[in-house]
Amino acid sequence: QVQLQESGPGLVKPSETLSLTCTVSGGSISTYYWTWIRQAPGKGLEWIGYISDDGFTKYSPSLKSRVTISVDTSKNQFSLKLSSVTASDTAVYYCARRGGLLSTTPPGYYYALDVWGQGTTVTVSS
Amino acid sequence: DIQVTQSPSSLSASVGDRVTMTCRASQNITRYFNWYQKKPGKAPNLLIFAASSLQSGVPPRFSGTGFGTDFTLTISSLQPEDFATYYCQQSYGSPFTFGGGTKVGIK
Image 1 (cartoon, chains in turn purple, brown):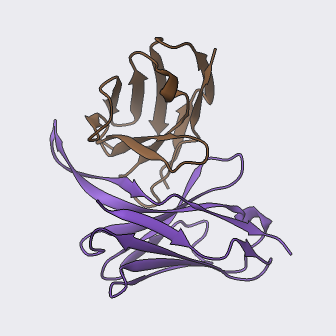
Image 2 (tube, each protein chain N blue to C red; image 1 turned 90 degrees about the horizontal axis):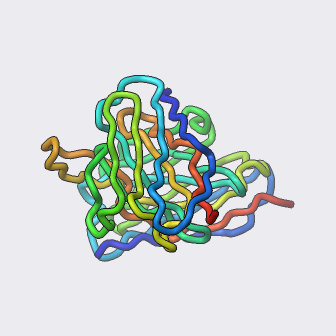
């Protein structure tokens, strides 16, 4: 059973770079897309971006100028870097797998976030 | 970007009630639509994918309908463990936006 675990500093100073890693266990990082999502206090879920096992990325336009997602297949890990953080980047950050799921009605494969990490809280404060 | 509008933002219901919530996408996304359950301090859990397909392990009291721009999640008989916040998400195109959430509380 695939499991994901986020790791990284829980406190980041304003203007610095937030760095998180997600370790994939119980399965290979290959053939899937891997996603970062966050939830600010009292807010909803925000999609940050994803990366494929061969390094193809897509980012949210609102964060694109500050976000980098990378993958290390040898370690079965992928990472998030968010630069120039402010207090508004304080959130619980989740990593998740974008799985290809088979629907029978109608038949076909569809994508959804089917495996999630437990989340890690990052606070931006001096 | 595709916008997803979820309603209501909150509702109150009793155990055994039938509960319905809706999402509307800003453009036609066919069946590329998912629903998640979120409890405080826990990661979201996938309930429904492809608008109406039940994820493995999810109780059949959860069901999804819809196509195009309008989608609905129904809980046929609300159970105590269903009090949570529910999020919809479009998986048609990047960025894969979420709705604002519907919090299901105890009446």
